[in-house]
Structure formats: structure tokens, C-alpha cells
Amino acid sequence: MRSLRRGLLAGVVLGFIVLIVIAWLADVRAIAGDLRSFRWGLAPLILAGTLFNYTLRFFKWHYYLGLVGGGRLSRGESARLFVAGFPLALSPGKVAEALKAVWLEQRAGVPVARALPVVAAERVSDGMAVLVLSSIGVLTYPRYWPGFAALWAVLVGIVLVAQFPGIGLSIADRLESWRPAGRLARPLRELLTGAYVLFRPRALLTAVSLGTVAWFGEGVSFFLILVGLGQPATTEVLALAVFVLAFSTAVGAASTMPGGLGAAEASIAGMLSLVAGYPLDVAAAATLLVRFATLWFGVALGLAAWARSPDLLGLTRSAAPLPATASDVER
Image (cartoon, rainbow, N blue to C red; front, side, top):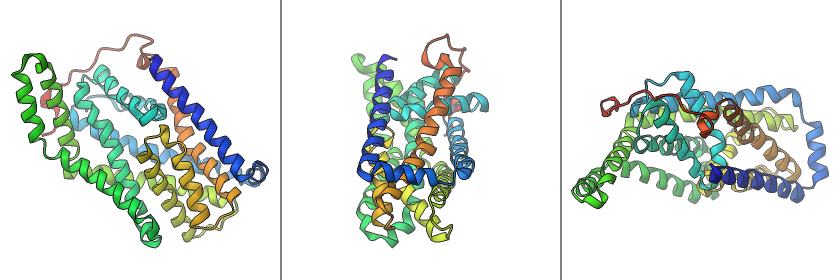
């Protein structure tokens, strides 16, 4: 837990530094003027778009749990774990998100090794969803094509590897007969089984479809932010908002920075300035507002869940887990 706290604190500090750098590069006074003139009456709608994103992604999360044997976890408990995972994205490389697999073992009896692919599948399906939303924009602005293709290649590669677990299972069989490493055989089988199930075509299509609609909701939130900063409420601005936010989200995830900090902000501000020709102060103000309405809003919700759930942080005793067996896993 000390390592977790240090990692999250580093993420918060990095976020503060990114905020200062953006404000300094774009002129603090100009940004302050943009924020004063912003149509704050749109704030509830903007946050509603973010909540829409979280809701659909929760459905995806709960769907995944059913596939790996955690379907008997109540939706309320599942939602608590899902929201509590938001701050973990601030850890370096988002490695702390593996803690969600520990929670699933504690609360639902799903082995950690079988639950870990859920965390990976969330990221992969989200990545594919935002790339789907980026497609039209990339065709319009071909300068982004190399990065777009590289991201797709990585994600498709992960899916293909997961669908051919034979080599890994043969390694597990060999480990089982070798006493010094025999205890690794079962976790390896659980890991490969979970990954295989979650990346089956039907499961992947369901997850990416939910993710695409979910991230479109955040794109609408970004559109409302641009409108609040004085941009016209046209379909062209909506298309720009969805493309910029989706592609920047993919860039931030690929950077492995905590919460995509630095990479996502630079991408959003840079694309608004280069693609749409927005003044730098407007691009910076839009960047700060959308990151507060998405990343930091989610972190705040997650910290609230932590405050109400000290058992998740090991501060109180966890409830007895629901039993989960291999027969619960969809084959």
C-alpha cells in the first residue's frame, strides 16, 4: 500500500506539473479570460457525458466478469470495484490496476491470474473503440495515419496471441512436471484461459461496441466544452471533438504515462491548434477543461469510493468471497 500511495502521489504531482506547463506555454492570463467567459451552464451536460461513458464501460466490465466466473458478484459490488479502480490509472504504467484482480479474488473468489486478463481486456477494447472513432478523422488528416496503424497493429497482435494459447498451455504442462516451478502451472493456465475467453470474437465485438458508444459520449462532452468556449455548435466541430479526444486518448494510453498525463494533453492541445487552427490559449483551455471533466472527475469519484470502502485498501477486513470455480468460466 505504501508503494501504491507513492505511485498515486507521483501521478497527482505529474498532473499538477502538466497543468502548470500548459498554462505557462499558452499564457495564463489568456487562459483565465477564456475560463471566465466559458458557458458554465453546460457543465452538468459535460459531466453527464462523462458519466454516460463510465456507465457503458461498467456494463462492459460486468460482462467481462461473467465470462471469467465473477458473474455472481452483485452489480452494486461490481460497480464499487469498477469506480474504485479509477485512481489506479494514475500509477506509472497503470500497473496498479492489477489491484483490481486482487479485489476480484477477495470479493468474488476469481483467481488473480484469471482476473488479470479482465484488466488487460478493458484496455485493449477501449483502445480499439477510440481507434474506431478516430478512423474518419485519420482519413481526413492522413498525417496521423502511421501512429493510427501502429496502435491498431499492437492491439490486434495482443488479440491474436490470446487466441492461440497452445504454446503457453504446453509450457504450463512442462512446468507442472518440474517441481521447482510447478506452482506456476495453474496460474499460467488461469491467465491463458481468461485471456482466450475475453478475446473471443463475440466477446471482443460486444466490448468494442460498448466502448465505441461510451467514448463517443465523452466526445460529445468535449464538443460541449468547445461550444462553451465560443465555437459554433456544428457537426464539423462535433466530428473534430470526437476525433481529437479519441485519438489523444489512444496516444495517452500508448505512452504508458500515469493517466496518459502529458501525452494526452499535448496531443489534444496540439491537434486543436494544428488541425483546427485554434488559438493556443483556447486549445489549452479546452484541454484543461476536458481533462478535469474526464480524468480528474473519475479520479475524484474513485477516491470517494475508497473513502467509503476502506476494505479495498486493506484497512479493514474483507468480506468472505463468493466461491468461483473453473466451471463458471465460459468456454
